[in-house]
Amino acid sequence: VAIGMPIECSFSVRLGLVEKAVELQQNDLLARFGLPTKLRDLPHDSIIEHVNYDKKILGNITRWILPVGIGRAVVSSNVNEADLLAVLKEHSS
Image (cartoon, rainbow, N blue to C red; front, side, top):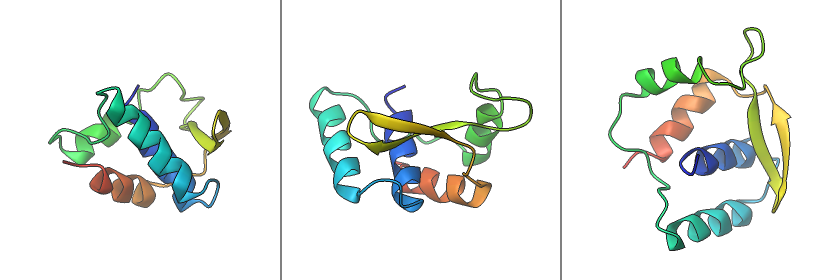
Protein backbone atom coordinates (compact mmCIF):
# COMPACT_ATOMS: atom_id res chain seq x y z
CA VAL A 1 0.00 0.00 0.00
CA ALA A 2 2.76 2.44 0.97
CA ILE A 3 4.56 2.18 -2.38
CA GLY A 4 1.28 2.73 -4.23
CA MET A 5 0.71 6.05 -2.50
CA PRO A 6 3.71 7.86 -4.09
CA ILE A 7 2.87 6.38 -7.50
CA GLU A 8 -0.76 7.46 -7.34
CA CYS A 9 0.24 10.89 -6.05
CA SER A 10 2.62 11.26 -9.03
CA PHE A 11 -0.34 10.52 -11.32
CA SER A 12 -2.29 13.26 -9.59
CA VAL A 13 0.54 15.73 -10.13
CA ARG A 14 0.81 14.70 -13.82
CA LEU A 15 -2.94 15.16 -14.27
CA GLY A 16 -2.95 18.51 -12.48
CA LEU A 17 -5.16 17.23 -9.66
CA VAL A 18 -2.74 18.09 -6.85
CA GLU A 19 0.25 20.34 -6.26
CA LYS A 20 3.78 18.92 -6.25
CA ALA A 21 4.12 20.17 -2.64
CA VAL A 22 1.49 17.62 -1.54
CA GLU A 23 3.48 14.82 -3.20
CA LEU A 24 6.68 15.95 -1.47
CA GLN A 25 4.94 16.22 1.90
CA GLN A 26 3.39 12.77 1.57
CA ASN A 27 6.65 11.11 0.48
CA ASP A 28 8.54 12.80 3.32
CA LEU A 29 6.01 11.46 5.83
CA LEU A 30 6.23 7.93 4.39
CA ALA A 31 10.04 8.06 4.54
CA ARG A 32 10.00 9.28 8.16
CA PHE A 33 7.99 6.16 9.07
CA GLY A 34 10.48 3.96 7.19
CA LEU A 35 8.00 3.09 4.44
CA PRO A 36 9.15 2.69 0.84
CA THR A 37 8.71 5.46 -1.72
CA LYS A 38 10.71 3.77 -4.50
CA LEU A 39 10.04 0.51 -6.32
CA ARG A 40 12.48 -2.34 -6.08
CA ASP A 41 14.09 -3.43 -9.32
CA LEU A 42 11.08 -5.13 -10.88
CA PRO A 43 10.33 -5.23 -14.61
CA HIS A 44 7.78 -2.54 -15.39
CA ASP A 45 5.83 -4.83 -17.72
CA SER A 46 5.42 -7.28 -14.83
CA ILE A 47 4.07 -4.51 -12.60
CA ILE A 48 1.62 -3.41 -15.31
CA GLU A 49 0.46 -7.01 -15.74
CA HIS A 50 -0.26 -7.28 -12.00
CA VAL A 51 -2.12 -3.96 -11.99
CA ASN A 52 -4.63 -5.67 -14.26
CA TYR A 53 -5.55 -8.01 -11.38
CA ASP A 54 -6.05 -5.27 -8.79
CA LYS A 55 -9.19 -5.29 -6.66
CA LYS A 56 -10.11 -1.82 -7.95
CA ILE A 57 -10.70 -3.14 -11.50
CA LEU A 58 -14.31 -2.74 -12.55
CA GLY A 59 -15.10 -4.62 -15.74
CA ASN A 60 -12.02 -3.94 -17.89
CA ILE A 61 -11.37 -0.52 -16.39
CA THR A 62 -8.58 0.09 -13.90
CA ARG A 63 -9.62 2.59 -11.26
CA TRP A 64 -7.02 4.64 -9.40
CA ILE A 65 -7.40 6.40 -6.08
CA LEU A 66 -5.77 9.77 -6.77
CA PRO A 67 -5.14 12.38 -4.10
CA VAL A 68 -6.48 15.87 -4.73
CA GLY A 69 -5.27 17.28 -1.41
CA ILE A 70 -4.18 16.19 2.04
CA GLY A 71 -6.76 13.67 3.21
CA ARG A 72 -8.85 13.96 0.01
CA ALA A 73 -8.91 11.69 -3.05
CA VAL A 74 -10.97 10.87 -6.12
CA VAL A 75 -11.49 7.65 -8.05
CA SER A 76 -10.24 8.01 -11.62
CA SER A 77 -9.83 5.85 -14.70
CA ASN A 78 -7.93 8.61 -16.48
CA VAL A 79 -4.46 7.00 -16.35
CA ASN A 80 -3.04 5.66 -19.58
CA GLU A 81 -0.21 3.15 -19.99
CA ALA A 82 2.29 5.80 -21.14
CA ASP A 83 1.70 7.77 -17.92
CA LEU A 84 1.95 4.58 -15.89
CA LEU A 85 5.31 3.69 -17.44
CA ALA A 86 6.64 7.21 -16.90
CA VAL A 87 5.62 7.21 -13.25
CA LEU A 88 7.04 3.72 -12.69
CA LYS A 89 10.36 4.93 -14.10
CA GLU A 90 10.28 7.95 -11.77
CA HIS A 91 9.78 5.67 -8.76
CA SER A 92 12.31 2.98 -9.64
CA SER A 93 15.34 2.74 -7.40
